[in-house]
Amino acid sequence: MLPQGPSANLYQRFYDVVRRIPTGRVATYGQVARLAGYPGYARQVGYALFRLQGEETDIPWQRVINAQGRISYSPFRLGQDHLQKVLLEAEGIRFDSDHRVDLQCFGWDPASPDDKA
Image (cartoon, rainbow, N blue to C red):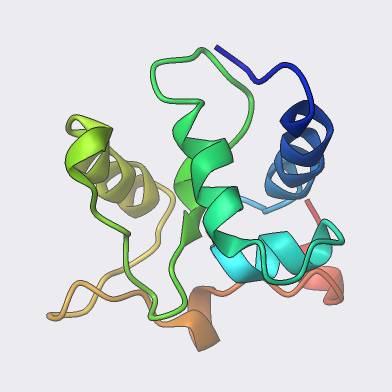
């Protein structure tokens, strides 16, 4: 269920940023928070994206990873961690032997003309 109440506007701003991440690119939780106008709210971005679990959505939640270039695994995501990797690989994103994405290669730069959604 999508949020209602005080967090609804905050989450909507995060979702608006995530919708802009183009196919084949990733952003970090902190980057999404900064671009939404909430620097330091990386954890809240994670909460907002977790709320999408099981929802039919146009928000490409799988394109948000942690600052180390990894999927943030959680026992509460009920298998979505594996799904996230499968979805990213289907978009052409590659993981190294340490299960990391090269943010220099696959990181989203919204200022770049090549990275416009």
